[in-house]
Figure (cartoon, rainbow, N blue to C red):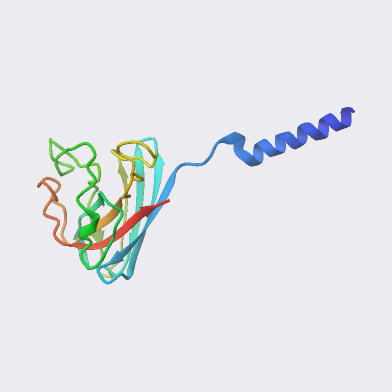
Length: 175
């Protein structure tokens, strides 16, 4: 009987370790970005952290220079102009720009630098969004959201888009 209890307790302990005591890892999402011709140009991973959502982006085959990078309000990336992605994600009704005293939009992110080889990378924290469903600032809202790269840099102030210019790459944010 004593042997049976030890084996049973060992089995229960092993199951708790395997299942992690009911805890899961951080919430995550991904996005595959395509250009205006529908060709893949990048990937992003999004991870819920205490400060918001960490976005890690890697791109290639893009024009060299500085480009605006935003979260848009709809999870649609229809080529060629990505207009169906709507405006910047702005659930709190703020003005555009990380430097705007009446902003920023929840979807405003730092500019992306792309080198002469067409490759770029960016790591940023979107402090005004979440991956938790059911919240007003959730990136998993009905209709979804997307990541967008624009032709020009964002001036971080001018409403509604920071003079970012045409949209050159888009990726739907998905689980």
